[in-house]
Length: 613
Figure 1: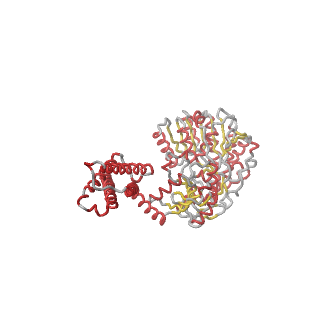
Figure 2: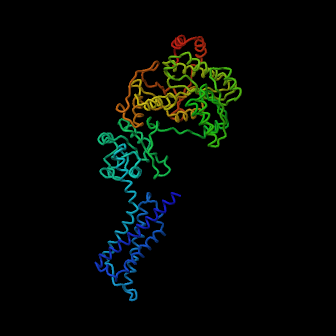
Figure 3: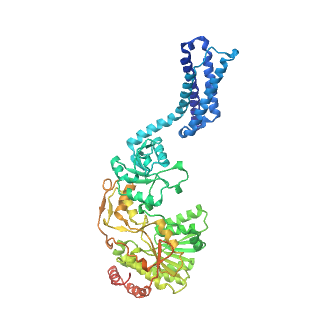
């Protein structure tokens, strides 16, 4: 009811303004043409003419729908339409008055000077538009003053249509929280010009200079048509500044150009490499209608694999994990997915450790899985160093229990999720993971089950990853702790990791190990600084970064020694394969490790193992 009342009030206000505008302008034109004679009694009909003129104008405006135009959305097209109709009404009335001068029965004792009338028309049509733009202008002035005094100072990368939309939005919204101090564009024709009142200073390569000179706090990439390569180059260049980096979605992510919103750049952007597209048809044809058991199903990777397989048509997902909160959360999300997307799959939980042989075999007996993704592990390097016996029992003995159960219950394929650290196993975690690979190699060929190991690097934003740790430290106000200034890691986004795992699981061939290509390594220090900027702070000023030194078991930063000459190209440039030839070493090593009774003896036995690489 209140909304309807407000509309009626707005309509009546516009009616009144248009009516009195033309009446006043007409009377003023009469005065300019006839002088003080208009105040004599013989010229009273002038007022009636003005009233009729105003009434007809308002009526025609209403019939044309001008009073239904939202003032907040009035644009060039609506303005031209109002100006055209308004001037047409004025001209028609002037012509009628001229005709009346030449008809004896209707002759009036006065006439408007055509020059004065022309001026009246010009003033009238612009005033009609100005009345409708006035609220927007007032809001823009208010927003500009508000944003300039209280908001972050931003720099636009790009000076095209998308940038103009952002500028207009910031000027009409007093709560935008952003004041644009300038723009940069690679088109030389735009240098020195303005866009929406914002000056274009120069090319994008000069961003660092202008960020410092203008005191920029936030940089917004406003070029939706950027190629991925150019986008990565700009993000990498801006990462060295102290400004927060944000962007608008790319063209393929936009629904409507006039609904552009500013969003944060993603973890994928921080890695600076393109995403990976999974061959969904091939993966779906393999797993549709199948039962898949996922150990570590409550973790980030296990949970993400479960959700992806459900979307691709898996009949049943069995989540095996001893951590009740994690596995319960994943199962809840999976059931929501099934319900919301009308999927045909189902989810079951097995709440226990992979080291419990009786329960493991009970699960395989009950669910008879077609495929197994073995994600469960002791994977944190310092924890594994402090608890080597636990790492052996989970990463080695637990893996062996699962391999035996997979063989006994006719699993088609068993995928062991390993780590790129197993290439050069110089820590407890890396050595136990490498032994898990050897275990799979040992059982390969001993039944119908095919065993594969899939190696990958660190996963951004997974539970316990540096991104998660850094984010929590930033939320607490810092400092952010980095182990070494030279430390670097090979990172995946969670989405990339899962897609590559599923893609590699569909490849043909008797390969023992799949190595997932991560591209170049990422500096941990640079990643920490980028995350601080993304949170809206300046590194070392608002939030400090402290180098703590390498933790127990961590190695100095080195490139992972992939020897691609010994690997097979799979047809996918991010997946390489190799044949595992050391599986025969496993039984003797496992027998020795099984005799370890405490952490000291476990650590000693692991250290004595040679030729694991």
